[in-house]
Image 1 (cartoon, helix red, strand yellow):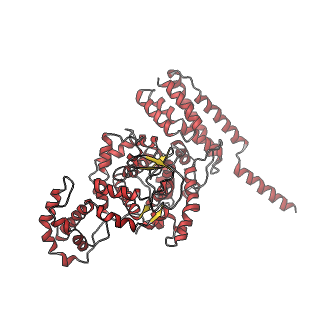
Image 2 (image 1 turned 180 degrees about the vertical axis):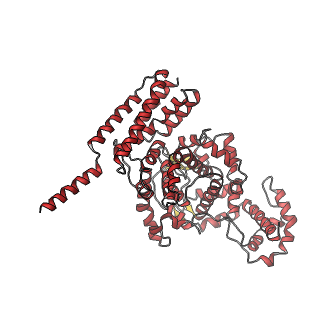
Image 3 (image 1 turned 120 degrees about the horizontal axis):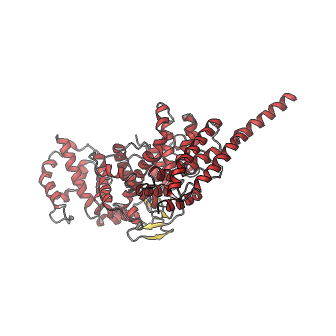
Length: 404
Length: 135
């Protein structure tokens, strides 16, 4: 390991410990500066829940660390702000962290001596897939649905919790991290922009939305969760993630491993909502469910078509929309019937038809979910983006929301 | 004047044709739906079901494919319905392929649940059939 890598490792360790320190001293100050992109500024339940999760959950702490969510400090600033971590013997660390502290104290003086050389260097955090501004805007979509406060599980349609920047950035980081793992471990073809459309449509990135129709950011249903735990369906992907050796899966695999041993109870909605494990599980399951939809439901009907139209620029859109149709409330049979019908058409027509109603003789719309997304984007999302006037959503759609 | 009238009539005819299927296709669709109802009302006796289902299901697929070839790129509501009908039958196909053994019954019941929101009426009928075939 070269010197700069060593240094980066030390700084990351220092920051992890800083993240895990009690935050009470600063929380009041932070709260007074919180900006709510949506929701009631007086209801900081999600913000507090996230702070608590970063203190108590290794998943939340590791995401915060990996994506540099605690601050945008440079290495030298980070060391300055964490001097106490390195010198104080009286800090109250949680059990199991004392070894890390000792290790940092052992090596820190040597690292401090290199500080002048590295003052201008910025830490190499992982970057989130979506522009933060886009998630902020998407969170402004209004929906009247029941909300759940965790850990109590209290329900109300009036909580209207503040969606603050830390909440937005954390959710963006979790989705990005788990998406990267799924892409590394499976053949899920969904594009990040299609995934953005899905979360915008399902919950407007509100993790605490829950109704009989669905729970949490991905609006998971009971049958969807059962599907994840079916031996011949979702468990195949869950197993892959749990046993992954890829670094992209280091954080998410802890949830997959745990859930393979025991399926979390869906009656306790916080298992799929609460920051620290629940919200993160919701993101993991929405991605695992999509992978199952792809491999078991859509791909068998599309394989030949994909092969015949390999070079078509419309192929990605076809895959994205067919997958979203399978994810939506229309059910498996409708999603498969849609593909069955449209493979008769050339790719450009196939892609076009997917965003139009495909009505059966009995009056069902096979593409209801997709037409809903399309309408929601035009009616709700596009005007919000136009108002902000910073993202070219009108011309590029959600593609404009992907970080370079 | 006469030419204008001919053009107008032609355009109206073409417009009607693009939205509705021909009487020939309508007959094919009605045949398909009749056979489909037969499948949904197959005997609850396991042996009888296994004997008859495979052939009926294959015939339905053939009828759907022929219909698709005839209508070309029209994508009519009737062919959409036929595609959905065939998909809704998958749980019964799983039972037939697995000779109604325990695993096939469990997979069929689960697949039917995944189809619940696609066509609730058919889902209910198939659920009853599964329960009887797998008891």
